Image 1 (cartoon, helix red, strand yellow):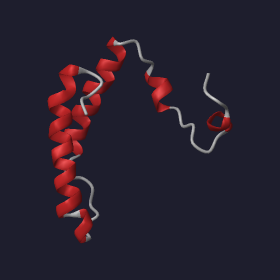
Image 2: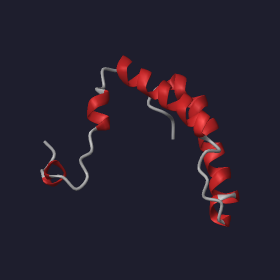
Image 3: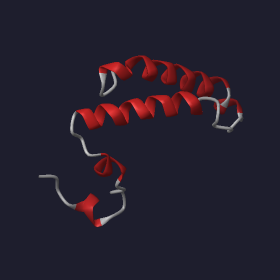
Image 4: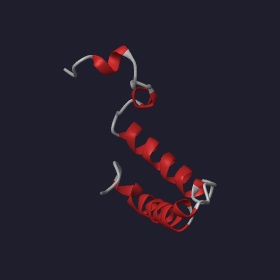
Length: 77
């Protein structure tokens, strides 16, 4: 699946590749340290935030926690 911003697709692919390697070759074998892909994630995250801003998608709405709150129970309009 592509990223929200076309300019972020390469960063997403690099992060996805790193994550899948870490998950299959380390995490599933008991190594739970999760810092192997941190730098790639941060680069991708910054790109996504920029793309969202350019598309007028509010970051605060994406960062709000709705799970296990009254807002989660309300039907979407």
